Amino acid sequence: MLVFNLYSQVPEIIWQQCYGSPDTDYNQCILKTDAGYLVGMSIYAYEPGVTNYHGGVDIWVLEIDTIGNILWERCYGGNGGDGPEKLIKTSDNNYYIIGGTNSTDGDVQSYNNGSSDYWIVKINSSGEIIWEKCFGTSVAEGPRDALLTPDGGLLVMGRIHASGGDVSVYDGDNYVWLFKVDSLGNLKWKKTLGNQYLDNGVTMIYNSEGNIMLIGAVAGYGGMVECYPYDDFGDVWLVELDMLGNILWQRCYGGSYYDLGYKIVELDDGYIFTVSSSSNDGDVSGHHGPAGNPPNGWNDIWAVRIDDQGEILWQKSLGGNDSDTPYYVTQTEDYGFIIMGITYSNDGDVSGNHSWTSTYTDIWTVKLDSLGNIEWQRCFGSWGREQIGIHSVIKKSDYNYVIAAKTNYASDDVQCTIHAPMDYDTWLFEIDLEDTTGIFETPTTQDKVKVYPNPARDYVVFELSTQRASHQVAGSHPVINRVSIFDFYGRRINNPVIYYMDNKIVWDCRGVQNGIYFYSLEMEGKVVSGKIIIQK
Image 1 (tube, rainbow, N blue to C red):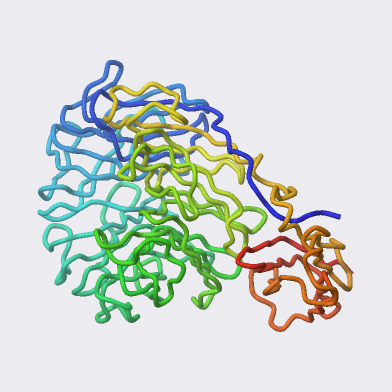
Image 2 (cartoon, helix red, strand yellow):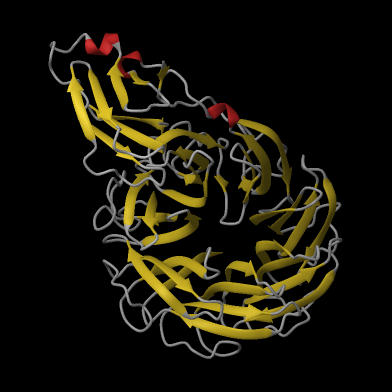
C-alpha cells in the first residue's frame, strides 16, 4: 500500500550567471534559441565588452549557450532611454525585440511620435538590425506583450494615455491598445479597447480556436466593457478577440479592491489565470493579508480555474500577510500547476524568504495540484531584492526552468558576482524541480491516510493510520470532515457513494467510468489529496 501525501525536497539551482553594468540594470526577458537563450535587459552604464552602447539607457541583448556563456551581444537604442519588454523568434530564424524608446538618434532612425514610443526592432540571428519602427502618440507609452502572427508579423498590446500619432480613438483615462504590423513593420490595423474608466492589459495568448485571449483589468461598465466590475478600482478583464481585434466574449472577475490579471493558460476544458488581488470578497476568498489597495492592504496571488464557459471551478488565494505578485503559470503533466512570482511575505503559504527586511523580495515558486492545493513551495533569492517579469521564464520541462531575474545582492542562492551591491544586475539561473515530485510518506505520522487499491475496480478505501485511528471510539466516523472526488478535468463529482466503516471511508466507484480521478480529504483543518486510477 502507498501512503499518499506530497511534500517537497529542495529544488536545486543547476547553474547561474550574473550580467550587467556598474549601475542599475532591469527589464529582463528571455527566449529559447537553437544555441541556448536570447536575453534582453536595460543597461544603464557602459561595461567593458559591451558593444554599441549609446549612453543613457540602452537595450542590451545577449545570446548565451545553455550554461550562460555569451556567444554574442549588442546594445540597441540611442542617447535617451530604451528598454525591452519581450523577445520573439520568427520562423526564418530572425528575432523581434519589442520594447520602448524615447530616443531619436542612434539606432532609432524611424519617426518617434514624442516622449516614449513603442519600439519594434527586427534583427537577424547575429544581432544585426533588419528594420526598426516606432509607434504611439506624443505622450509616454509602451508595450506589455506581443504575439507572432501567421504572416510573420506581430500583434502588439500595451496601454495608451492620449490620442494622436498612430492612435485615433481615445476618450478615457487609460486604454488598452492593440495593433498589428506585418513582417516589414507596416501598420496594418489598430484597436483601442476599454471605456472612459481605467483599463489595463497585461498579457495575451492564442487559444485553440485561433483567437486571442487578453487578460488585464477594467474599472467600470460601459462602452465595449459589457461585464460589471465589483468596484471602481478595477477587476480582472478576460477578453476573447478575433484576429482583427474584435471582441467575441468577455468576463470580469474579482472583488471590492483592485484585481489585475497577469497570466492565462488554456487547458483541455477551460483556462487557469493568475491575478494580483487585493480583495477578499466577491469571487475572491482566502486572502492572507489585510484586504484593500496599498498602503492599507496588500495583494495575494489569486489563482482561478474556469471552465470553457467562463464559470469558476475553483479559486485559491496564495501568499502571506505581505504583498505577493504572480508573473508566470504553466500546467504540468500531472494536471497540476507551477506558479512563479515575487513575494514580500515570509508567513502564511510562504516560507524561506531570504530577504533581510519585508521591503525586499524573493522569487516564489509554488506547485499546486489539479484542485489548487499547495504541494510544495520554494523561495529563491538573497539577502537583498530579487524580481522577475512577465516574459522572463523559460520552461524546458515540468522539472526544469530557466529564469531571467534581477538581483541587488550576492548571498544565499545568488552565488554569481554582481557589479555593485544594491545596484541591480541580471541574475540568470536554471532550477531543477525533479526532486520535488513523486509520492512520499508525509513526515507527520498523525495525518497519514492509506489509499487502496490503486488502481481500483469497484471500491477505494481511505484508511486512517493505526496511530491516528487509535484515538477514535470504535464504530465512530473517522476524523475526516469532508471527502471530495474530482474527475480528470478537476470537476467535482456530485454525490459520490461514500460509506463510513470505523477508521475507514469507502468510495463505491462501480458507477463511474475508467479513468484518472482525484480525491481531497479535509481532516481537522488540513487537506490530503492525491490521484486514483479506476481500471475495470
